[in-house]
Amino acid sequence: MIVALLLFFIGAITYALWKFNDTLSKYPPGPRPHPLIGNMHQVDFASKPLSLFADKFNGLYTLFAPTPTLEITSYELIKEAFIDKGEDYVDRFLLPGMEEVFNYCRNGGVINSSGDNWREQRRVSLSILRDFGMGKNVMEALLMISNIINEILFGYRNKYNECDDLINYVEGFDKLTKDVAKNKLLPLALAFPFIKHVPILEYYAINIHAENVRKNNEYIVKNVARALESYDADGEPSNFVHAYKQRMSKNEYLDHDNLIATCADFFSAGQETTTTTLRWATLFLAKNQQAQDKLRDEIHSVVGKERLPELADKPKMLYAQATMLEVQRLANILRLNVFRKTHKQTTLGGHSIPVGMAVNADIHYVMWNDPHFENPREFRPERYIAEDGKTLRKELVDRTIPFSLGKRACAGEGLARVELFLGLTATIQHYRILPVYGKTIDLTQQEQFIGIPVEQMLSIEPV
Image 1 (cartoon, rainbow, N blue to C red):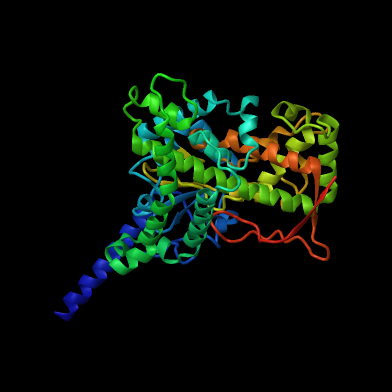
Image 2 (image 1 turned 135 degrees about the horizontal axis):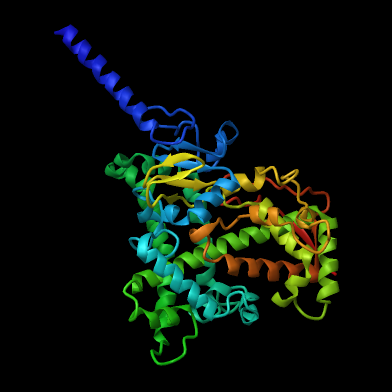
């Protein structure tokens, strides 16, 4: 009897190990995972990036976290996947539990949806934004006010002394981002779904964040309702909500829940990333006075001091363009990209990639480690300017990918670039940003999903 049991256990273990190794053979090679936990003991989604093993593999490898995840750390391979084979890598990957935390409704909005619904939400949203002048000069007046996203989405601006709801939303979203980053139980719950069936663990891992998201989204729900009060089906739409509502009757994928989810996507993603990038820009320029002076000299030469910079000035401001690129590259705020998923069986870099595999294009690693960027941790806008002094270096511009690449690149990319250009040039035009006397600028990036800078005081002088 004992011998039989012993043989049974040996056989079971042998079969389990064979099955485990057979599973590994279906994916590109990577650091060897352990059974059950995969590589979870080797990564921390906030402090230990998935690119931890980039130097050991040739641009791509599989991490088991514990779900098999394709980590891409080469620009050339990201381009092959998302541009050359874009349809193969077009779906969004969501672990069980993520949708409850991050989505207003199931498969809703632009960021976390997939399939035909995603295509329509993105297509219609970008069409509406273009109709309202995204990327054109008519947008500039909207982009220079403090609550620009409110104006575009809902058709009104908050008065300076009536911003409590907006401030609460922004502060709530900031707190949510920090809470999610600090919660060590959340990645475990996403990796091991059984945790969701233990009520106390489920609450502190997922439900507490889901409740905060729903509470914060009340601002979006209220403002969508407010905008719809002035909707006229026969009139010209004056904001995003009106334009979306007008198209609902002609498109089966457009409905009220998706409207709220899409507004929440644009609002949350837009305000957090742009604000954080501008914070980094002020720190980089405060620490690099020579670069700040060159930027200001160009602004004064092209624009003068009497009017604000306009988008029409941008083609004539080569150093400003280089500065924006260098700010976005070095700020590199997206420490963990939003995962995609293979839509079908495909290949990448000569490896077979199965359908449904999670994919992380590590743009954070590329912009800080690509060999095309000499001394990549230095702030040096000049790197982008070609030898002729009149054009930008295409090979570096192409590799500066803060919004990712391809069909699922950030839908708000055009809006964010305009905000950064107009906001930063208008500031430097009239003010000199300096370190506080006796203090050194700290460029440490805090270990969160969004790489925010350390809070510190700066000195501002009019020029």
